[in-house]
Amino acid sequence: MKRVVFVSREKDQFAELELMLARNDMRVEWSGTGKGLLSLLSNTPKGEWINLVVVEETLADTDAVALIKEFIPQSPMTNSVVAGTMDKKAFHDTYEGYGVLLQIAPKPSTADADTLESTLKKIGAI
Image (cartoon, rainbow, N blue to C red):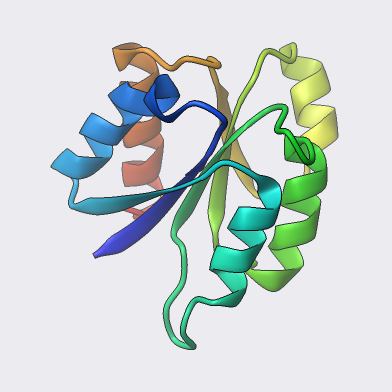
């Protein structure tokens, strides 16, 4: 089963995404901090990985930009999505080269979940 980690201060923030991922046989885990995500990544057994990280733009201990820059060298095959509000150009300029699939609304809707599902299917992640 594929693993997804939501990095967020609020568990219900990604409820629509969680439903879509469950339909696609993906197991969801939670971390309230960037440090927690890094711990999950470092404690993942060799030969396994986290397939997708959905990270809130601003966390208690870091922000999405710093967190993604830190975890990508440790887990380069992990896809990521940012829940934020940057305009398209700033988002592109900030995350270019870090493998971020897309930006979704801070509290994603069913339409955001559908967009993510379509994107994951296009890249063969589900």
